[in-house]
Amino acid sequence: MIPPSGLCVGLDLDRDKLPAPYRGQPDDMQRFAVDVIDAVRPYAACFKINVAFYEKYGHVGIDALYAVREHCTTSYVILDAKRGDIGNTSAAYATAGFADLRADAITVAPYMGRDSVEPFLAWEAKMVYILGLTSNPGSQDFQRLDVGGMPLYERVMRTSLTWQRSADVGFVVGATSPKELAHVRGLFPEVPFLIPGIGTQGGDAAQTLEANGNGPAVFNVSRGLLYIDDSAACIDSIAAEARRLSSLLTSR
Amino acid sequence: MIPPSGLCVGLDLDRDKLPAPYRGQPDDMQRFAVDVIDAVRPYAACFKINVAFYEKYGHVGIDALYAVREHCTTSYVILDAKRGDIGNTSAAYATAGFADLRADAITVAPYMGRDSVEPFLAWEAKMVYILGLTSNPGSQDFQRLDVGGMPLYERVMRTSLTWQRSADVGFVVGATSPKELAHVRGLFPEVPFLIPGIGTQGGDAAQTLEANGNGPAVFNVSRGLLYIDDSAACIDSIAAEARRLSSLLTSR
Image (tube, rainbow over all chains, first blue to last red; front, side):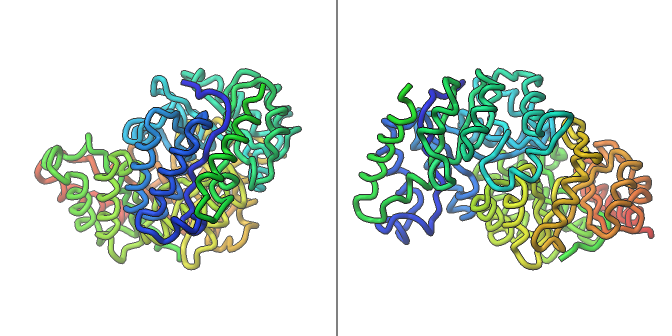
């Protein structure tokens, strides 16, 4: 199931960056996430939960992960996990994400190829966002290498659309270069994109929206939304910014 | 810190495949893992813990994961996680693996490039096994694509050896083709390899050892060791097979 296009609120809970009213309190991550979810729910097309920031805190973090996911209730939830392994292992990761955590979508790394991704695609009514062109500096290292007349990321995308149940394939395409995003969108007009990189990573919301054209897409904002106000009014500030971003990102 | 060369015992706990004496018992995964660890410890150069098989069971699985890691005590532990994300996220995964779980090494996926791997390398006295050429069928899809006169996997390996603290870089190199393993070993005679694929995936131990020559390497066996005997004598069988494999894999 494809999420509605618009703002994706990334729940990347960095305990060291929590606004002052939450920092150092018991259950700080979870309390902050719950308040953020409640505040931005009217403006969020979906939530993206980055597993790393929970795993980092061991048992406490895993408890928070499950609690935060529960609090998203019926909202569309993307589990940002970037998993990928041999078939039986990917099948276990898919169970962890789609069954245990009840995610609607998972991000997956493509390096190990078809049988590392298909166990995720095997789940009905779930989506799999395959890493295409990412928004980080290291995307230069391998993703843009030429493989027979096209960059590796394009080959990854084209190939993955030939796999079983590819109707559930989406791509992660970074927003750091609007020109490049427009190019990739031109290649795959109908495929759902998860577009990270707006805000802290440098992507401009309006330019990114324009570059994406009319393709189905969710635009993720994490740090650029969660950590904009360190005061007691932080949740109000986050709600206001989410409303602004949502209006900007769904204006078409 | 590099593990001693030899047999790597993969603790890939598939609950559905547990030997009959453990299957369906409370704490079945954990009890089986503890008994296996005790039985094979004299023969294992290291243990490899595949996170997926624990994550699959939610909280129960995470509890088992921590308990199993604790039971490995001072043995060398490779966390098979295949993580990789933008810098601050990879840093969180590195903390989860190296600090919380006290792993000695982690497997990492290279698709996102330098800044997705360096946060793992930043940890002193820890190792990072980067996916090079994997043992699954999907390794055909992208890893062998030609990029400027060499396959992508070779480019990944060469490039990653230029990164910060690359003395802690090892590679995952599958054992499914001895000829290919020999070729890769020839390219990187001194780099530690984690070699999966012996047993169930088709790799022959003696041929694999020969193909690897004198390079530092651990040879992982998981399913081909854990699920060979469904009887009450299963732990004895596993210990005997581990001794045989260990002797075969450290005969030079």
